[in-house]
Length: 332
Image (cartoon, rainbow, N blue to C red; front, side, top):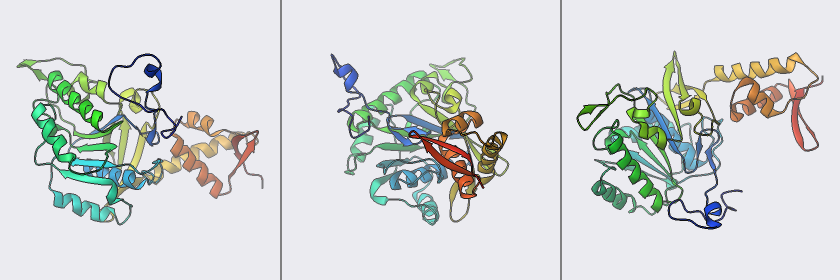
């Protein structure tokens, strides 16, 4: 079932009979292995790590339908609302000018909402937010919030405040059907308080509240490992609720111009070397791609790119038998 052939879905309401099973939105990938339609993606890091640059790069990839990091497939163009809750617009535009020297962007597919103040966990704040974004006749499919904390009155650690915030995001999804969220967050060591009392919470609570981990479909931490930036998955070992997807992405930040993240070639070369070593263990054996993914524990896009590299260097070749694709050492 594809997005086009699926029966008309409805996210909220009361369903009976066959509608219980039929009016369901298909899991359509937005970015292969990272982000699905209808999901809520969270990316967090300490301040100054480059989250906003990553957020803008997502805008570029999503609006243009260009593969993220030239590796992770973006299946089509998506309509995006980028909500900026801190920093100034001039800095954002300046970054985009430098980013566009290397990356495509379709300006007809997105809107930039540089918000002077947004509160989503109150009825007044939600009403104001909706009235402003409806002024732009763009049927948003993805909302990116960068960062999330200014949009919540109270505490990110308060279950009550977070529940109200999530209720508002569900209301927005009622208007923009099958909407997806990508939120960015500053990691802090804030203690958890509710109603004036200190609350003991498990360390795995996302953003300090157990309510966040129930809302987020998948989350990533952005960290530095020497000169390399690493996106490491968190929930379900970073693979979301299904346990599937990309677990780790190693990137290099190119700056000051062009300004963008690229896949860390050293990390890619490491995967290519591991796969080439597998072929050399038995030079007559044929391998399916999915076997190699399981063996090296890398995502489909990373393994595909490694296989392309090995084919370009005439080390392996692709063969098809009874409709199944295999790879084997190329005969000389």
